Image (cartoon, rainbow, N blue to C red):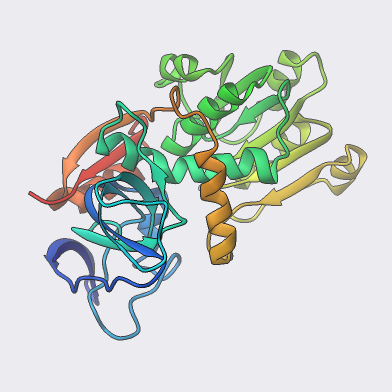
Length: 324
């Protein structure tokens, strides 16, 4: 089969369409004909070893983290998925003509969604649902701050918080280029910051109390203001660390507020834990959660799509059309 392959040597890393072996179907799994994938922020760290490693057996190293398409084949023991079902999933090596995944780790594509919509949505839905509900203990009526709100994932956090019944959703962005989009997705207030100085505005918007829950996609220098902007007994969930993995925190302020800090990642979850995340997304009404797509490009342009995403100039997701 064809796939987008990662090639790494002393001169750097390149992504190019090439040949890779078809994955074997195992009991409890399904084979998917992939129609679309996307690029994600973490993709840029894969070649450097920060997120994933080359196959130990020396076989082709396939790029991608998500996939949407149609079920081609089901393995032994699979009873609730059928050939022809349209599905979306998160899987390493998603930018290939076929992927094989655990049958529990699928989300049906909603009626009216394209394959591109599904590919753009699945990682964000899994991440933001887990961050808000499982890690963040979201309750209807909560006031929520979403940092890094102009990323594809941040936008889905804004959408989902609104859909779940947040009393107020505050979106934090680096600039005003996506303000109208964020308001359209459900943000009551859009603030701008490149690292600090936004806590006072959050407090002013919440009657001096702060938000009940912060879903943080940036980390780094933003963290002190996040602590200041979160209410007594509030929850902070860190999803991303694009502004840095190390933070400076006033533990006295943290303790006085009796805050809870949780981290979110997929890398340390068991198969059963991942399956539970998919079940959480399947329980959502996805009608109003169609993702924001910046552009769709052919898979021959995957490397340029990753470069574009790294510039921070896109609004929403960059989707990759798989195959001819």
